[in-house]
Image (cartoon, rainbow, N blue to C red):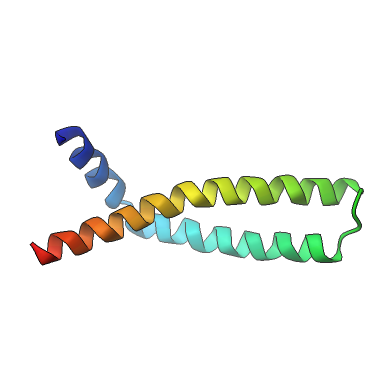
Amino acid sequence: MVNIEKFWSVICDYEGLLRLVLTFLVFMLLLTFLTLLFGTPGTGSFVIAVVNLVLILLFGSVVGVLYVGCIRRETRGRKE
């Protein structure tokens, strides 16, 4: 149990940076959707946009889970 608290303590020290990364990923997601919308399927740039979409979603999921975990930990700390 102590290791988990230490992990969340270290992660939550970077809460502002996590928010910044999430903001950047949302911007990148918007640009990727525009590329997919206006790109021609089958071209190299379209394939790169699909790979980019997968990477953004994977990385965004990890960062989002960490950020939400910090927010929940912070709210739980206020209630106690």
